[in-house]
Image (cartoon, rainbow, N blue to C red; front, side, top):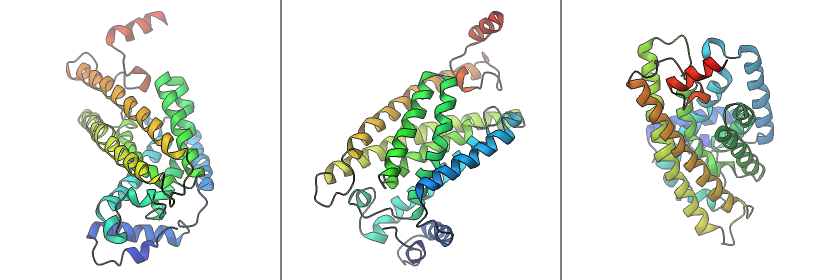
Amino acid sequence: MVLDASDLSKHEGIDGISRLILKFIALLEDWGAKDVNLLAVGTVTFVFLLGIRLSLGKYRGVDWYALLHSLVSGMGALLASYLDVFASEILTGVPEPLRSCQCQGPLTSLHRIIPAITMGYATFDFLDGLTIGIDFAMHGAALLVVLVVYVSANAPHLITNALLSEISTINLNLLRADFLPDSLSFLNQLMFVLTFFLFRIIVCPYCWVKLMSALHSEHNTEAYCYSPILYPLAGIFGFFFNCLNVYWFYKILRKMKRKLSGQEGLKTNNNLNELDSTPSKVKAKVKAV
């Protein structure tokens, strides 16, 4: 059962930011967010993003459909995670993610909708990954499988925190933007490195450890109501995503080192399939063509 955000926002013990977030969620619930079918959310998201992809393409160097998704998913996960940290225990008496693992339902409707939105996007992530590299294809496939399973099992709120990783993708989607001046392009690249490290290397693994601990303590209790597969699935895929992010961060640091040393230009070799490209490799590709 999803708690009513309007009622939660009236609680005297929460801070002002939590109150504002809950009032925003209450507006979404006025439009039916509390009871909306999540598979329908994923389907509508896919169709909507497909329309943007077909109409805008890579206009001005940006995949606009991917940028829009990362903004909605990343910022939505940030709002939901803020409530988990600063308001959940005050509002319900139980902190997250323990509360969710005790089958008390999502804290708010936002917690259940954000993963469904990313589920609609995940097909693009997988298909694009097939043209970029095996690591990106594996990421897209794993993302799609996890989201479909958790949404279908009515447990998307268990992995909402993991979508904080999408915050770094906002900057990633702007790396090839040709309308940014050099100063803003450099700032965007710096922000990408910082947000990748903060959310994908620090915050998301921490959230994963907390989730696994809560699932471990609750999955054998009589009150546990989720499919038995969700606990091992969270462990296997969480470990995979964390290892993949460490591997990508290593490649990102090497890329930034080449740019800061002048081996690569600020706005050159910024495609995802050029993450490992060095000037000699790029020249070799050009000669081969």
